[in-house]
Image 1 (cartoon, helix red, strand yellow):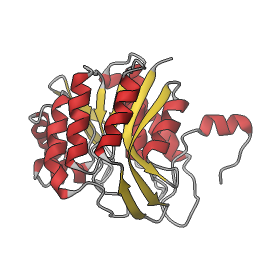
Image 2 (cartoon, rainbow, N blue to C red):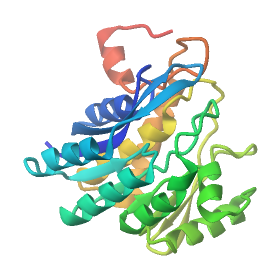
Image 3 (cartoon, helix red, strand yellow):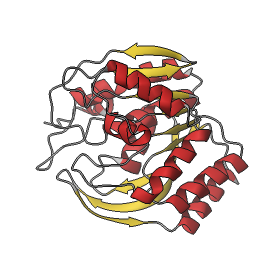
Image 4 (cartoon, rainbow, N blue to C red):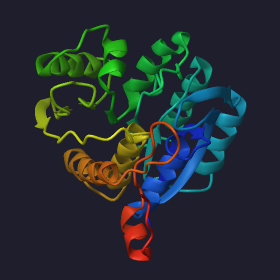
Length: 267
């Protein structure tokens, strides 16, 4: 079994962060492991609080994994402070890690800033060692200082982010009003990835889920473009079968096939 590590924050409501990552990895048949960077108090309505895990404990968690276990891919999600980001970069280089996927989590869907402003430059520096970075449009705007309103802007942003050192860049278009199409800069070529916009409010954890799916598929030996294609199919199905729980933005259906087999209703 392939082994995938997620380095990210915890979501107490289970829809995003570490919890979404591990659910996704399990659903896709890889063994998920975690390094927790922050503990959040959040639910479907929003984020009520964040407590960062100390950089020293983040470092200890990473060393515990790599000193004992062979890791086939790494997904990096929420990391809020520059010291922790620098430690992650240092250790991933020290352990000569391959297949690094960065989801540059900056702001929650409820508008809570999960990345400290002083850490934005550190995130840009971390991009220099990743195999693929997966920003949505607001995140791509922060990374490039560009205003993104259409496909051409997304392409321009992808090339600007590549200049930071990323081998490949996926700019997700879900925040566009007219469509949800993505742009993939892969092997210095632009690929248009069409997506059908699914009309549901229950999209909590979509970015975490997609990036974890990509990491899982890459760990299993798929090329980056194939891994993204398969992952988009997975997240589309998960969104189509999202959960109407809580009073706000519900989670997607990570285990929908398992639930169907078990005869569980999630409506």
